[in-house]
Length: 147
Image (cartoon, rainbow, N blue to C red; front, side, top):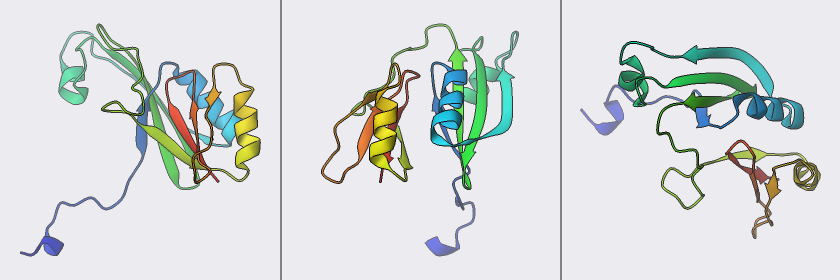
């Protein structure tokens, strides 16, 4: 069987997920400031007696997670907030293993950057040679703005 005929391959990206330190703030920001829609998919994940949290998510068995989905166009983003013993509360830098960002095309980069720069806890960085700008959020997610 050739590589092109193998079964069991990925066919699409369903969504991307990011761990944040404040689920409600992240969801509100993306809906109120950037025009995402609330997909109304929310739940709490926990197992107070067993080990399903470790088996499913590789987290402490007593971890408690909450999640929510938002969308724009056909794209979906999941935010997760965890409470767990011994979890790191420091977001990875862009250069760290596991560093990540969410790149968003915007209709008016200068207007979006100026608006976000006025929000408490947001840092809008200088544009790179292509005009892209990175934004640090107070809920631990890096955003890249693309014109």
